[in-house]
Length: 83
Image (tube, rainbow, N blue to C red; front, side):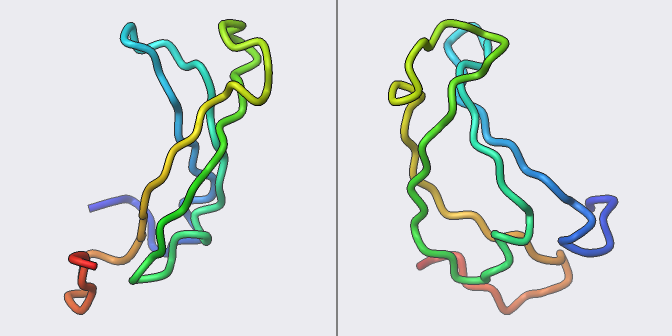
C-alpha cells in the first residue's frame, strides 16, 4: 500500500526513457491528478531530453511513448483494466 492518502498527495510523476545501461536519456513530467480516470484512454507523450545526460542533443529526438495509467485507491474493486 502506498503512503499516500489521496492522489493529490502523490504530486509529480516522472516517466523516464533509459538506455540499456539504465542511464536516463529523456523524461516526461505529469501531475498525479492527470491519471485519476478509472478507464484511461491511450496517451501519447513526447519525452524531453534530460539536461544532465547530454546523449540526446535535439528536443525532437527525445522519444515517443504510449501508455494507459490509472491511479486509484487499493480498496476500489470496480475498476475494469481489461479495456
